Image 1 (cartoon, helix red, strand yellow):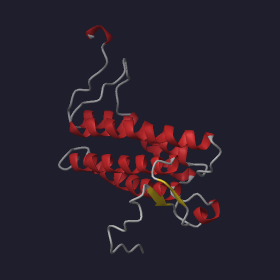
Image 2 (cartoon, one colour):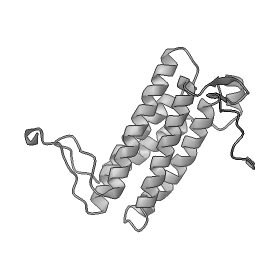
Image 3 (cartoon, one colour):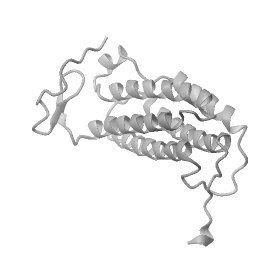
Image 4 (tube, one colour):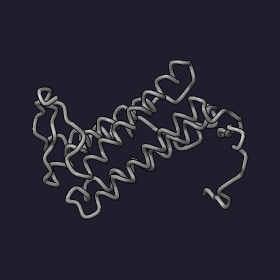
Length: 192
């Protein structure tokens, strides 16, 4: 069990923070930036869950998004742990998490009309927040890809998980608009 009884420590006042294991790094390091983006994504999903209160989409999406928030916290902890041996004993993203997202995408996508253009973010509050979360997810994914390209070990499922999660958030946004009776805005290039 985690116990936090003090919010501030002053240990980061010089622009550094500690990774799991004690290694001190700059708060501007790519690894810190990556788990910061994952934390931002988690906060955006919190907005989605708040927007879902009273929505017809809530019974389906609330449990999925609650699980995803926990998975994202695990991913953040995984990213904050550079030592692979130490990381192996902690909660981490596994192939089963990616597979579950794929199953949820396939299930909800069957209800959706075929796309005839790109979707513009919108379609009600829930859908809008899901599209916001999707864009944050894509940024987090790009940060992880850059870290992996530099040779750092992130675990083998971190990038696939964020890639699939961004796809899921897109489908969830479309599905929420449909279930909530909102029109889905589509890109119309002639209207520029």
